[in-house]
Length: 352
Ligand SMILES: O=C(O)C(=O)C[C@]1(C(=O)O)C=C[C@@H](O)C=C1
Image 1 (cartoon, protein in one colour):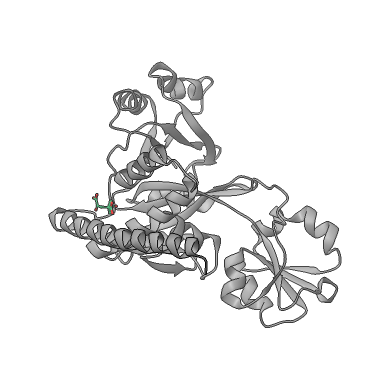
Image 2: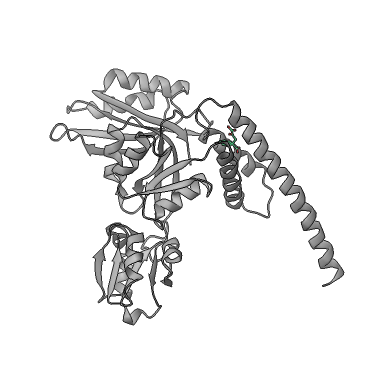
């Protein structure tokens, strides 16, 4: 080893010692905060402010996404010292939903796989899990109807959102595509990879699975089969990756919501999700939405779903910019309450 290399490594050792001391000091401070908290340990608004501040201060060479990644894990460990969290998600292990849990909460949580979106809501409502992570829309396939229907019924609040890029891989016991006669996947993933499949695996039959992870599990026991799933599923089931990024749209992403029992305080960069309905009359929807324009509230999403109560009546699901405690948002919501036949605010939370 050259003198210079030894010198550089000595400097890294000294920095690691300092980081170790500082990270443990940070953990002790989090513990002290934990002892002073009377309610929820997880504070999405504070975590969002920490990430925003660090990104602002970051001078590189590490990219902002790396800094967020690193501090997600540091905060995750500090939070777990205050109180261990259980987070329910759409399982089994190896799904994109599990990746979403890790992206939002870090690794220091107990992730509880559930077999349906209904089961996730039930786990959180009963207190068996502190939070649930549910898919709400995909950039290619659109809204996840079951999540939207359950939001109407649940007493839970929306506490957060995150977006996960969805990169699909073809995986099998080997990489010989000529030997693949069957492909397992979830129907949504098949829909997202149609062009690639039509070009590269024309004759293989497509078999629907309950989830991508379940597809990978089945491919792991059949040498003539492959699965379409996320990279994580290949790791879990010991499969080889035959092709990566096979989704038709390279910007394919799924948006997830975090649901829990708490109202989240303003972070300074928030969104509010709600659903509303009005009479089925000419101009009624225009009138319903007017308060947003009047109080300068931006809508980031507007989606209609059948009300399920009355034929051909619709509920409008809306995301707006701002927190329900912000003055303009509060005024718009009050005006909406006066006009709408139905209004439910699901919650305000830091924008992803
Ligand atoms: O500031 C708090 O309330 C903390 O508990 C500390 C901390 C952190 O590690 O920074 C941990 C958990 C919360 O979700 C937010 C922040």
